[in-house]
Length: 328
Image (cartoon, rainbow, N blue to C red; front, top):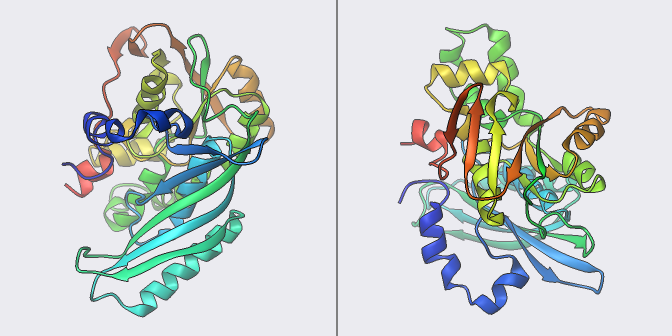
């Protein structure tokens, strides 16, 4: 199997179909859902999410905390705590473990999460440290994102820019090479795109303005998120590619390495469905968060991508471009 997210076919066939149907509805176990939901108090739901990798940042476990918070925030949940499993190779140094735990705890505290504990083990099953996190959040039963689905006729709003964190990973890993081709200022700006990785603020605003469904962009980029959101709801799409926001730094760096930015890890951008996309865009702009309406959900199954007069169709999510290009 390819590295990165499981393909849709394998995930459905060998994972989701094995889960008893009686539990699936309550826990939201379905394709495209990044969180699971369980009833808590009468007016609350516990939300659970897990992450294990941020492409290009294998040595930055604090990035996993942000990715975890993004999953919970896109489900409309307030992050509260995380459980951590650490697998270490036999030649691991204790100093590396200590530094990693320090970074995780600092980031968790900054995000308002408590580290509850977990399990740490040295094993010959891994060749480098692996950090597996499960996050716990809570939300009101009346909050819809994460439980309601995209509906035909709703507009799709995309925040900030796509390919942010993926471009940052490339710029950091290949800084010297890139600076032989591009101005240092361009490369340095791209290296700092990972500072924009959190979508917690835009998710909170979208929730306040009645966004129906939300999806934080991650592996597979914006194309992966669009497919998962539509597939989960059983809707079609009509997307204007020219309206999808993309930084020029990402355009240049992705072009240099023959990377498709639309399929590159894109943590830092949130996809939200709303009855009035422009109203949500104005609310986000008032908070200093750029956003754009990029299309809408439609009846049927066609998932259309428009670029001027050219029309093509969205395919199932391919392997994330980081893995295809840099870890093949």
